[in-house]
Image (cartoon, rainbow, N blue to C red):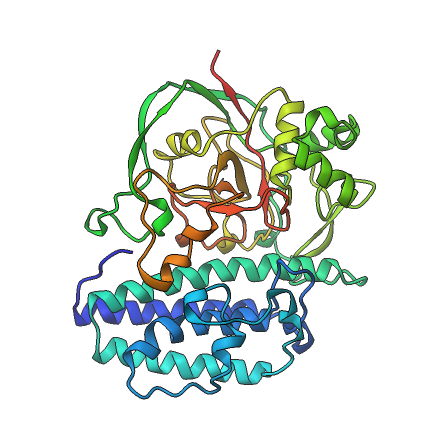
Length: 427
């Protein structure tokens, strides 16, 4: 975490930032009806009410309770209900049963947020120090992660409703995917050699980052080529029509077992005829030129084999992204869906649109050390059997991403906005 100087001006700015991020979470709920807050469509997703409460629990558990003498929670049982996976913080409610938490009510959860916010803002005004600022900044980035999860979880929940309701109507031009033809797919060559990736462990040498982005270290990267844009719906549709989901030779063993068990035949949210898909704006036609999304690592890897290419390693991806501005189709564009690439030179779409699967397992960098105490459970204990994604998506807050950001999911998961960028060994 980045150390923030202890000054009234800086703490005032942090308090303002705290208000902005917390308000953004509430704004995401504006299109919802009260019935939408409790639904949990699968064990990997969480109800909106739980997201609202858990992000508040994080500030209460790690900042307010340790720093406010004789602090009283609105309900002591919230400590159990809204803990996610922090064993050091005590027992927790079963994740798959979060949709059964009809009480507290939405109004009570909103009151809980107000209660904790008031205590935290008082701390920033009266008991501010660098350690407090670090924890608040971590909590805000944690909340931004949940803002993205709120949209992906809502999309899955609405897709399971036979009415296929829209989260938000995409009426204006700014909220619709950009029309047009995707530029031809080309590959850009990168030289091999020793490269540095990650961020320095010393917070004085960097801004905020999660502990899994450190320490900066040297790694050898062989010469490689990277696709100039993301894989499109039309390109993936060719894979489907060529029997991609029926050819065991294209799939990793666990991937083929998953395809057979789950009866996968196309990307999540595509209709059986491959002409329409469910989006946060309801059912829309599949744009053949837009990036394909909602793919598992298994599907991305199988497509890459079919295309006679491969997925990039995360080191290759970071080498290519290091010199690129972190601009792209993020949440702020209002599209809430991947857009057609409009750039026909260099590497496009490295940031935004879809999270890009890499060929790298999620493990700690050489010399990695998790945060001390219970917060050390944030990232480190998940470094097993998951794969790294890079770049952010169309529902990621723009100021939440950076070239070193490491997202991670299990290889079968596909409810996130995840897609494909191809790579090749240099010839």
